[in-house]
Structure formats: structure tokens, C-alpha cells
Image (tube, rainbow, N blue to C red; front, side):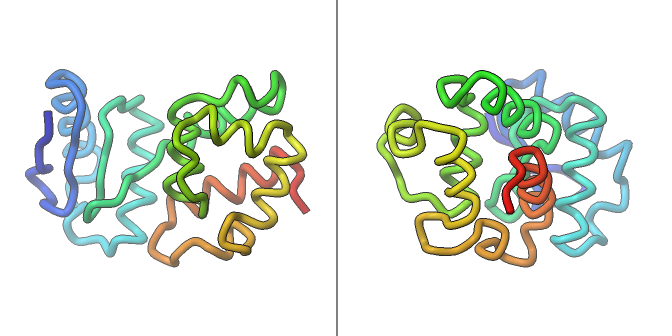
Length: 158
């Protein structure tokens, strides 16, 4: 299911009816002025709400995903502790859609290209477009920038 957010039509929610309803209620109550924010401001506010209210629905802002910081960091810590085979679907989508990775057919294909934590660190230093992931990101993608900075700290990327 898919639904525009009534307080800001730039935001689209998707998922189950229950998850969308919970997300709409949380966003409307937590950020009633959302429609007045610029995209960089709105993305961080939405991300905070996602994490504080444990929103499960997917959220798009002007057609681009807003990512849960807490979920990505939890997932990256699992990968660091237990290896690349613990790469979650959510983290794989984040890496492949937001961090400068070309399609690798599927998650297992991505893991085959980056089989170790050292390979993952190298990816953050130089993505598949030849740039550091943080430098690759557009300025408006504030939620992703925030996550990548913290991933670099967790992985000790220098």
C-alpha cells in the first residue's frame, strides 16, 4: 500500500495499512510543521521521528528514501561483529541505493564483491564511482550523510 502524507505531499508512506497508519500519526503529531521545512531539514526530522517512534513503514521524500539511522547502525554493528553474511536486506538496500554502488544482482552478489569487513571499509573510502561515500552524497541527503558519518566511526574508516 502507498499513501501521501496529508501534512506534506512531498512525503509518501508505503507498507502495510497498519504501518502506514502508525507512521502518519507519528509524523503528524511529532512534526506538524513538516511542510514548512526545506528537504535537508525535513529529512533529519523524519529520520528522528522514524527512530524515536519505531516507524516500520517505508518513507519517501520527493521520491527518495529516508533511512532509519538506528536500524542501519544496529545492522552495521551486527555485520562488524559477525561478518558480511549478517548483512540485512535493509542495510544492503541502503548500501546499494544510497552509497554509490552499482547493481550486483542481489545481496549475495554484493557480499561476494565485499566479503570482509576490510572490504566494506575500503568501499566507504572509495565507492564504485571512485569517491569516498561521504563525498559522493548530495547535500540534500542529510539523513544519509548522518548515517555514513556514524558508520565510518563504527568501522573506524580513516
